[in-house]
Image (cartoon, rainbow, N blue to C red; front, top):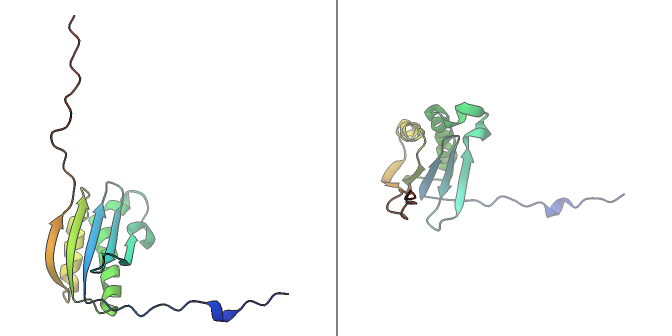
Length: 131
């Protein structure tokens, strides 16, 4: 029988982060949140399905609030003090994210940005035929 080597298991790195960026993607069906450091590498993240929400409950503001609290509490254990918030998408979760950040209270918000693409201009439409 082959014996597995236990020394090959990897240890988690000790991550310290003081300031970061909270990227929030809200769609019609889900909310995805990622905490990113200054080098744009992902530190923490998740979506509302990880917390057990299924179906239409995934896009509610309450589900986004619970997910944000979960991620920010883990981030406080890593030493997070201040964040910037970037929103993308048109879902309902924006209110829940702000409510969760205010309820945590120990994290300062540096800035809030909107990254939702807005359609403008574009190509001309097809003209109707002349009969």
